[in-house]
Length: 167
Image (cartoon, rainbow, N blue to C red; front, side, top):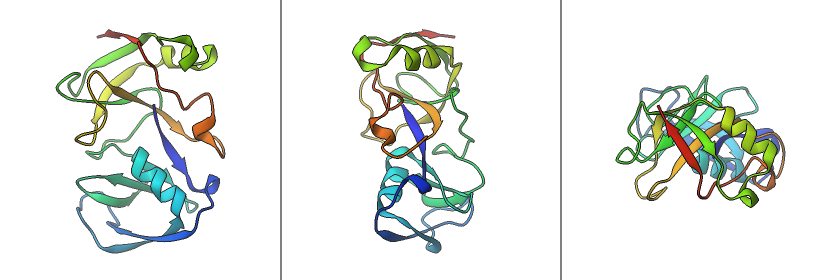
């Protein structure tokens, strides 16, 4: 799963971020502000974060940071919770629709979380950073984090042995 980091749930040391003030730019050097270090790391890990000003700080390995009005995929598409997904394009190509038919091992996802994931109507609109993910791996976008220590919550799960229905 991947999510939008939310600045108000982070309190690390302030760190300056440079990048682009708009989407159609790469490797910018504009001052984008100062944010908690753990928030900036979460944005790098997840790809997007909601700042205290209501703007989104997005990240892509081939573009760098940019500010935007929405959470975005690596190619600039708006992310939609329980719809957007990222995959290795050699395994599940861009535009593939799927549902999660089974969450796999039960200890990986509590029943309530699994039920919500199974109701999703997923569409591959994003891809992994090269070298990440691995064979038969995909990430499903679940929206903004809901509190501090989100990565310890029932929503931060890795499904092992999950079964998908394609189409």
